[in-house]
Image (cartoon, rainbow, N blue to C red):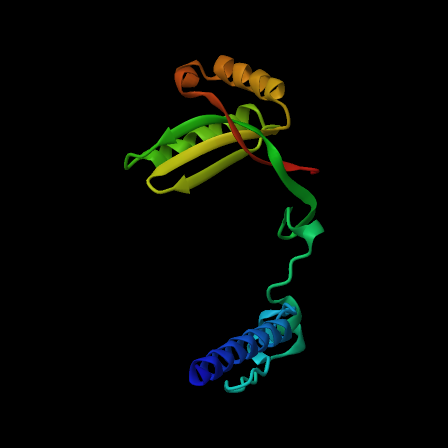
Length: 168
């Protein structure tokens, strides 16, 4: 009986010790690193040491995007991307799709220079989207105008939800 009691007591103390050790080690690493450089350079028991040499400008630029700048377009500090609507004028996946999309964009830009054209490629489709409209009603007006201006494209013109440029 004594050996079983002694073994049980030893096992229980071992479990308690390992549990407290796990809590200590997780609390020591619970502070989140500020940057990738800090995470890599952090000293940990039983692991090697990593030393990173880089200019301060690189360290300042890597991996830090403030919350208020997350929606800004690079190089255009007064432009924000927000949810809105655009008019899809073309969507194709044949060999001549890029040429056709560029041709339609040039026609629209010539007739309606106030409407910005966006040509995108997501394999295998070329898409031509027009405008930056915050409401569906504005997009509907533009859609009707484009259908009147280009009746041969009327069957392909749709309103789509997209991220739009706001503030220019």
